[in-house]
Length: 573
Image (cartoon, rainbow, N blue to C red; front, side):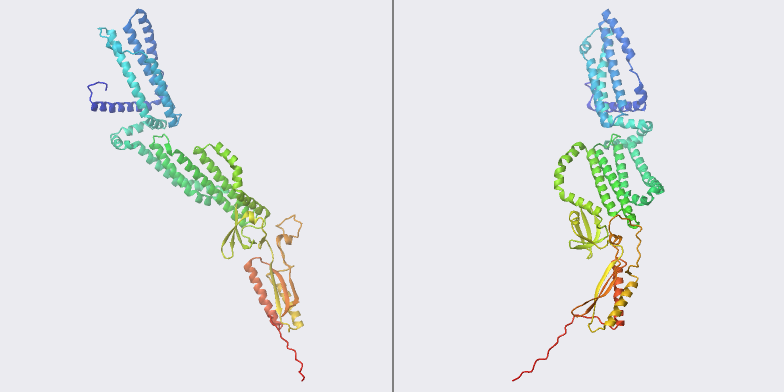
């Protein structure tokens, strides 16, 4: 290649052949990597013998013989240094990431060059110009030319090691899994070489494609069969049986996304010669963290919804809204932890971030004072036990059913089917009327007016019959109505009836003489506190009252006015 008479085309052919030879040499070395690494310094014995001869020739004054042997020693030292460098690089392949390996290899190149600089401190060009018929001089010139050729070849070795760094890393992975021989054999087949000549400029080769297809098949099998095995295993775990189906249904899609991402990442990993996924590394890491955080979030919420349902259907001391708020706090903590992990893997300094949060905490507290007030309002509502989710309450002119007690607001569903959101800080300081905080007795109160022309005896009989009818009515609570107090224990210094919302009063009396009627007061409580059942009971009582009045010849009065005209005295003339 250094010959002035060689054409450019010939140089290109030689360069291609040289690259192929270096590539084949690398294949051969990596096929027997361990044997190559375990080799001792190859030319140490030759160097030792030559140094003895050099000392003898110097004493005898054999100038050309001394130069001949000195140059040969330098050639051996060049080869030893090169051999040591390559063995060190091969050792590093097993213990480093590709980025670390690149840095290490650059360091080895620098050390090699520094070592060679110490050897090449003498210029032998003058010796090559001497024209004497000396056999020793001729041998010295041959050694000098070989020495200079080795210097150039050492430079080529560094160049091709640099060019083949990904190939080395890839072949080393194959070697670790005892696949290097079949891999090299496949790539050396005629058909593979033809295909590789077309696809190699795009970063592919036949073996890479085989491995990518194999990974697709393995991941498909894992997705299809192993997932079913995991499902069956979870269903067999007694403690998870009631959650397993809902949990698996909720996390199926994010798990499928994770499998797809793994498939893409492994494909890029193989495409990139097992040297990582480069700039996509952070993207995949953050994506996995986001999906895993979402999976934890879904699992926590599935379990919480099942727990809340159990509390609604089973008599337990824990309020469902306490679990609901607790789950929201846990969800917030999950999101914060997930965000911090994402920031860490994105390269952010968490110490700085947390310090910034500490310094800015006061400012955040001032900016979020309303949110903090609402949060403490939530705690106040939960601890006070004034109302619960599902209760019918009236507050500040609004009335409806409590849909949810949240961290910031409580939502009501009004009876005209609208949603009202009331901040908890306001709700905690308002007068709240809870229609559902009663266990037995919903009031029925009415005043029945009968006409003034009614007979006293009929009125008295009707009142007695109404009192008896209400007392015996199956839907009305009376002193004889029993209620089980055994499940409720309290140390409060009030009657159990008042604490638990139990009313059994029954009052039927002649109440007043009004402007246009004689009024009978009826005051009692239905057994059921349900609105529809209360209306049914009240309706039945009213029908019975109408029947009693009819039976006693009494009529309902209505507002009326009687006008009496006095006789005018006669006029006298």
